[in-house]
Length: 191
Image (cartoon, rainbow, N blue to C red):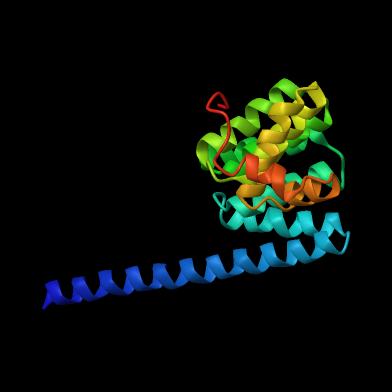
């Protein structure tokens, strides 16, 4: 009898923990969604309050850190805080390729093109189909004056669905004939 009572008590504790965990996860998502709405409505302070609460409830919730980094970068123009926040994501999940792209974007804004290039290359190493990372690499090569590599990466970005790459190619008059030249892939020397 004692054994059954102990077993039932253990089961009840596990169920209560599971219910509490689900409720906490739901609260984290509500806070994150509210933060997203605040950010879209140009209310960064309110968004940050929601994000801080979400992170208090779940310190491993990567999307909250990602949005927080974006707000530091875009609304507050605090690049150091944004970098620190994006790096926190990589401490949690080193395969979160978007964090590498976001860090690269900040380095790009700071005109640290070598660092920006390395970050986007890491993003591609983690996710070889990340079109926006290819576009960023192409753009950096464009700034460096290596137009051949630039176009190759931008076409690759378009292949992987980068809207920016497709718009860039359309805007700059790259026609179907030129696109067909790249349809079999790109030079093997692209790393």
